[in-house]
Amino acid sequence: MSVISDIRNDFFSYQLLASLYQKHADNLFETIPVELRFWFSANMASALGAVLDKLSDGLNAIKFIHIDSSIQLILQKNDFLSYYGYPRAVDHHSTTIQYMKLKPTDGKFFSQYVTDELLNRTELPQISAALKEKMTEAIYEIFVNAQIHSETEHIYTCGQFFPVKNKIEFTITDVGIGFKEKIRQRFGKDLSAVQAIQWAVQDRHTTKQGVTGGIGLAILREFIVKNRGKMQIVSADGFYEYSHLGEKANTMSARFPGTIVNLQFCTDDQAS
Image 1 (cartoon, rainbow, N blue to C red):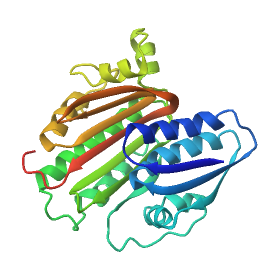
Image 2: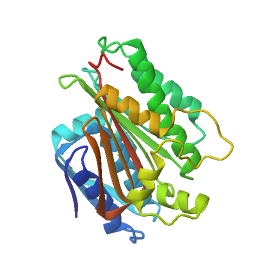
Image 3: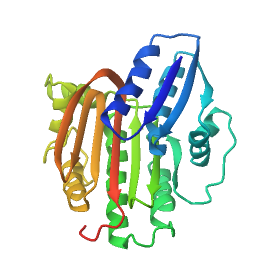
């Protein structure tokens, strides 16, 4: 039994999802029972979907044997559970950003998705046009990084508005090779997962070859500070967080099979 409980946007939740993968990584032709209990931040459907798909690669069947009613409702609203046979629920409060499973070649589709889900949302009149544009640019940069770097088959996206807290959480996950392996291939550097993430977010550091454009992770960090938001990156067993309060990094006890990037934006920000 795999009980997924109290999933938030924090180190322990990422570690729990990595542990879920590690626990069942060697399973073949099995049914993997999953329970979702207590709390589940809707944007984290991005990471959970990536893990469950990766486990399905072993021809395993994913079976939800229990989902707390409040969790089930939000995951029906954002379309995550429709991938597992559940009907979609209407989001009357318009707080969800739809769960999507995309191919790396779906860049134009992703751009339209971000426009529809963020730029054209009328529920958030306090967000200035300039801030919406910067948020969209930041989100698209993460997608482009996954396209170019990860060698992933799919990219998983999901987000959530928190109107009372004036925040948006948006998560992009891939099941590719990760920062550590990409840097080893490109530069021959043998870094830990944490060191690889920290290297990648520094100014002028990139593994792109023959590609120009994009704001880069370093400039994205600057925007996060001005916005008083947050950026979290999980890759392999590395965890990294950057906000106006500073930098955090830690090594997880389990390895995530790809990369998660979570962006938190303050929607009442006037400084960005």
